Length: 311
Image 1 (cartoon, helix red, strand yellow):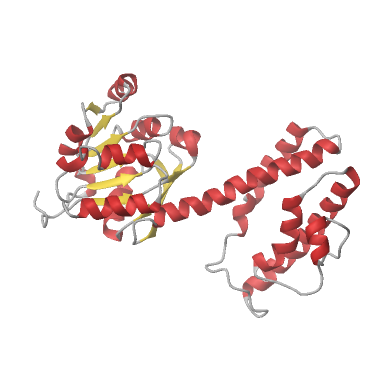
Image 2 (cartoon, helix red, strand yellow; image 1 turned 90 degrees about the vertical axis):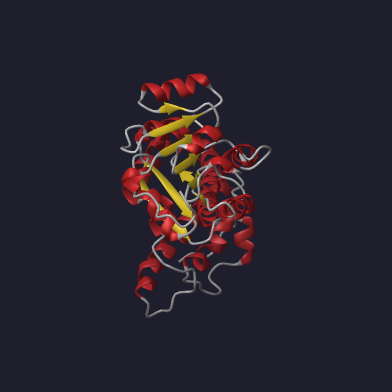
């Protein structure tokens, strides 16, 4: 295929997949029935054999895979492994024809993705950063979210083929690196929430509560309300004007949140449990929601968890 040859239609695109671990393996299995065919590679012969049983074709190297694939997914561990597959030390994907799209599903540095995209572009190959969210469970169920950074045209070419592995594929932005930025923002919420979970568990344990029962309540209510993502409704993070529709939406969220955080801090004081994340949340919640107010929460309360005024 020449550099200016028309791209293969999505339905006829030949797929390749490199990295068949706990997430990549189920992803590839979901793609094995693709009409254009799937070729796979992994250092584990057993992983490759499992995919062959699903109908895929085995390649003996990334270079061999790149010769027969129009769209290549890569799901390996880290930057070092991605570089080993794509660029160094032997430029194993240099056999990819111009027009090939390489979607990197690993969460790597945005700088690494940009550098690889620039190098690949010299050969007419498009590299997209396309990290995933949903973990092994989402991969097994075909319910991953894929966040794609790169040109819109390339994103559109992978949506249909990759649809077997993900039920949400979004275009994070035209620049390579946008997918990684979105994944990192998503995981910032994820792991800060884990830390907050540990803080809540310490409070519950000090109060003599059964932690698995608390977990059951949290999972149940989050399934109903949508959890933290339920407030991600606006298209910016600016302060909200009083006549804006969203002002009346977030005002009661602020009031309820400050009330409950204040009560949790009071309970922590009574039980001798330090709750730094709760104190920071109480201090920052109003401004974070876009409905700040002055003078209702003292800095002393926010830093110490002592009794303060809540809305």
